[in-house]
Length: 305
Ligand SMILES: O=C(O)CCC(=O)C(=O)O
Ligand SMILES: [Fe+2]
Image 1 (cartoon, protein in one colour):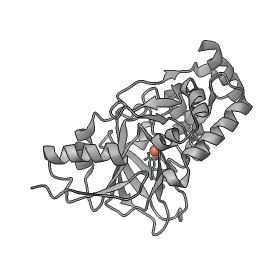
Image 2: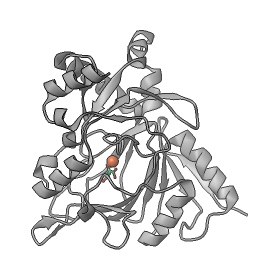
Image 3: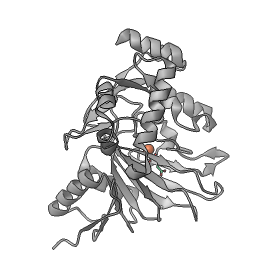
């Protein structure tokens, strides 16, 4: 008999899943229960799971194909397992040994690609004594609590997502940044999206958005600020305080998240992430020549749309 138990951790998002050893093959009944909980709670925490990279990959594959990380610089991937992105503040030979200072502004993973991730599974390998929490916001609630007038405006709106807006990207190795930019020209996505499994609408919003198609820069920035402030209201957020061995799995189709930088940077923080490949290509690439200059890009996008 299954020992699986699910305890909600927050009203907006988050549930703890206990009674499972994720190193073992997943029974069909547990698989179904996890999928249901994932769609309902958006962020699932599996505590005390000490997984090898192979075990993390095997568990992740229960929920879809893995993203091949073509959008990432190869040096940020696990040397033996390209399915794993290494998020670390550790230096090797004076250089960051993976994706450095990752996720420091609100974002939905891979929104700067045509096919944002379906979900992700993040395993905590090392953590500082205090700080370094991660927060997720429920973007269904964000959408549903906007006024009908704003919702009607957003229904037709598209946003320009830009990899260069990753917070702190300019502090990364310039060769790595050039690689990221080359791999990821700016893309346009609808602001309102429909979850392919639940059918519910949510916002694709965050701080890696350059602006909205057809709006002036000033209009874009004001609207973006309004939407991001609303979407990340404390009422919509689950905040996770990590322990080594936690595996957290989130639904990236209806959430955004941020990794807090409030910790002693001389202490290591190391996370391994598998990304589930998005099932829908919702974006379209904006001419790369337009990228880099906010005003010219907004005009270029407006011209082609
Ligand atoms: O390091 C973290 O807590 C999260 C980083 C992040 O944004 C991610 O893994 O997608
Ligand atoms: Fe992320």
